[in-house]
Image (cartoon, rainbow, N blue to C red; front, side, top):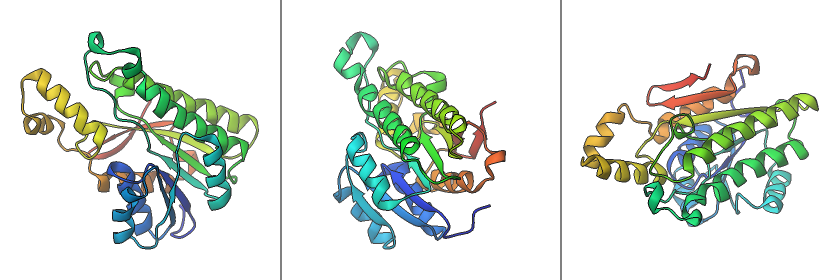
Amino acid sequence: MTEPGELKVLVVGAGRGLGRGVAAAFANSGNDVVALARDGASLAGLTDIHPTVRTHVADASDADAVRRVLDEHQPNTVIVVAGATPVMRALVHQSWETFSVNWDADVKIAFTWAREALLKPLPRGSKVVIVSSGAALNGSPLSGGYAGSKATQRFIAQYAQLESERADLGITFTTVMPRMTPAGDVGRAGIRAYARQAGSTEDAFIQQLEPVITPEIAGQAMVDLVNRDTADSAAGYVLTGVGLAPLT
C-alpha cells in the first residue's frame, strides 16, 4: 500500500471528463499531481478547485513532447486517458479518414507513452495505466475503428509489460476499460448515436447503463488500483459504476 504523498502522478488527458476526475482524486489523496492536456484552458477548471495540481500543455501523441514531460516531471505513476472522439456513423457511411480517427490518435498516444516509459525508463516500481474502453471487448458498430483501436491499446499495454519483465525494469502496465458513460465527450457521442438508432431518448438510454460511471467513481478506482500491491494487480480491468472488476 502506497502512503499519501509518495506518488508522483501524471494524468494524460486531464482537461475534462474521466481524466479530470482521475487527477482530482489523486490530488485529494495528497499526491503530487501533474495534469496534462492539449488545451490549457481546459485545465483551468481543475486547478481552480485543486490549486496544488500542476499543469502541462502538450500534444500527448508527440514523442518529443512526451520525452520532455517525463524528463521534467519524473513521474512514477502515469495514467493515460487522452484520446479522440470517434465519428459516429454506420460502417457504410464511414470513409477511411473518419474510420481511422482513433487509430491515429488513441493508438498512437498509448504506443508513444508506453514506449517512452520503457525507454526512459520510469523508476522501478512505477505503474502505467492505459484507459481503453469497454468497446475493446464488446465492439461498437457505430463508431468506426474506435473499438479496434481500444483493443489495440490493451495489446500495447500487454506488450509493454512483457518488455518491462524482459528488461527487468520493474514497471507495471495495466489496462482499464470503462463502460459507456455520459461523463465524457466520447460517451456522450456514443449515447446520442445509439439512442437515435434505437428510437430512444438519451435519458432513457442512459437509464440502461445505470449505475453510470462518474468522474469521481473513475478517479477513486484509479487511486485504489495504483495503491494495490503489484502482485495483486491484474493485467486488465473493466470499470463500471460499481468499480473495477479484473478480467480473467
